[in-house]
Image (cartoon, rainbow, N blue to C red):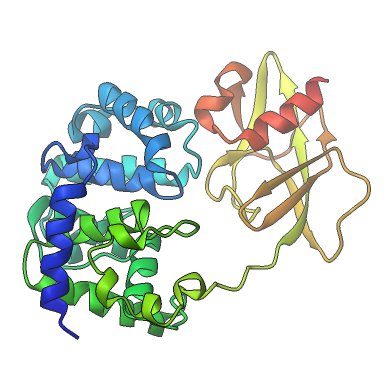
Length: 323
């Protein structure tokens, strides 16, 4: 396999076809890092207005580090997966103090920096010769090299990571990694494949063997879990009682209503509301209490609830109580 030739073809294609995206204007590691975190679970089109608004609020990593957490969460509202925003804030405090490490291995030590984010920032901002591996890259590499591998397992991911690293090892890792992601986002997409626009179409194994629609292999779906949540909603003088969540499997560590939770085999027939977070099917049975014995309760003004926890789950419960 001529990986060096593939690398050159990819870079040439990327330089001609890359989209003009706001985080590509320069090599500022803060902008690159912010875009990579925002782009997890979200599309480029959806992210751009959030990215620009967030940068207006927090133009530098120092601005983000010194901001109150509720302001950061408020600016993040709408992007979901709020643990990303919390980790962004925590990491910003370390980065503001010590500066950006230039190596993926050092970035990996920071909150919220997984293997992908640390490699993306290190390669795009600082030119470290490391490859990235996200959904787009997994799809492109699986198809280009005709790899029927279980990419969700460690062994399969490692095989793909090694190929990605090899492509970046020849240099220009910023263009290689962004090229792979661009190819997966615009040409070699999950539903629509435009092979004639691909720099690798002549050598693509899956195209030759008619495997394009079969690769990458489909990850087995995680079975949904049924949870019955009995939140205790206590409202007093325009404030509501919350606790730090150490008991429910969703929204871990966040401020939620106190209560109890249990996992069921079957969906209950009697409940006040229903909510889904990833693979958790949550059936809500609201409990009302005028007094609370929990000493760790924090009283939060109802009007500030979204700032403390922007999750729509709490709003849904509160709406049920009010109606």
